[in-house]
Figure 1 (cartoon, rainbow over the protein chains, first blue to last red):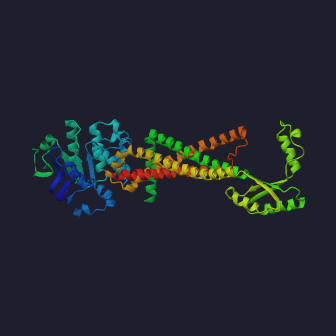
Figure 2: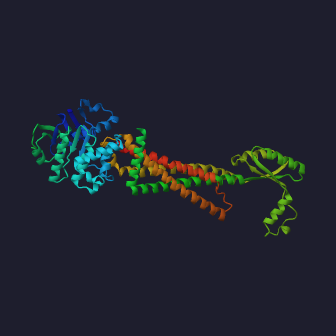
Length: 225
Length: 294
């Protein structure tokens, strides 16, 4: 599904964020990307959905090299990759329904289809009753569920989550992780960058550890070490 | 696809405007004020040009004819002068009538005891076609030595008037161009602020896979609406403001040649009315293009 070969990212100030990273992510896999702050987790995720460009190396998604993708095709690539952020990135002046529907609108879904798909995804994340709420009327956990709902509403084959539980309490973090596992079970490849040792150790998935821009460990059923 | 895009732009633009009302009204007010100043200076420039034309048209050359020149020859001279290409009109002034007028004008002087008889000659008053060709005309008048006694005109004043007309035009056009640029910068900055206030929205749009065209569309539409409403506001102020000023001049300074022609005012309103949405469109395009590169 995702193949990363010799990926390097050197920032303008000379800082090496990623050093010769090689990774293979199979279809419908669930991967934890762990490591200390500044290890390169966010940089790596940003590269996968082309929000940042590598200095060298290549990323293939379904054997398609991302460096060969023209700027005009980037939006189409992003429609196949759902992204979840620690700070939610919801449109503050739009309701829950509008936030989720927006992702479908840019893909020119019909109004009836938008209605149907938003209802389905709100049901999945358990927030059907809150579709007319604005983000500032929701709790952190609810905001993150909406962010996840928006990321998966068009059934992308890949879901990337960058510290999705970073600003949530332990119970809510558990709920979010279970939701991500549920999404993974619906045939979606999920990559979660996290600091949350407890969640990684309890859920027992593949764990890839990054340190100073390098992959130092890759365990099929791993722990946060 | 095109129709659904347009519907998307309009819908998103109105959502954007409705949810950022304060910014929306501030932008409209800023643009309305800028365009009012711009339109006002166009009107000032038009009026300066009109004053300069008016003064030029009032500029005359007085030609005195030789004493004892027969009436027949005076008539012939007047007709000859009137036919000259640089002459707008040539009017014969009878010396007796001129003397009556002169006495009427200076009633406080005891002219009867000071001056015996009529000292004034017959004369022809000439209005020139173009003020800057007055010297050329005077040169050709000077050739009429048989019939013309003297040529009286304010050479210095005409020179100054020519310079005034020339510079008033240059300054007028410069002010209008300068203000157009200033208005453009103000509007670009105002719209840039509205875009910056929603930069996160632009990023989110990019993240969910919106194409640059789809992101740009609502902002362009918003810029155009803000520019259009701002221009309408400016036009209302200019229309009623200028009418009021014209009325004041007609009442208190009727001799002042203020331009009261409706077509001139409507032309200025048309310029302001089209400048608003165009600059709004351009401003938002520049702002959103910069933001999309972030």
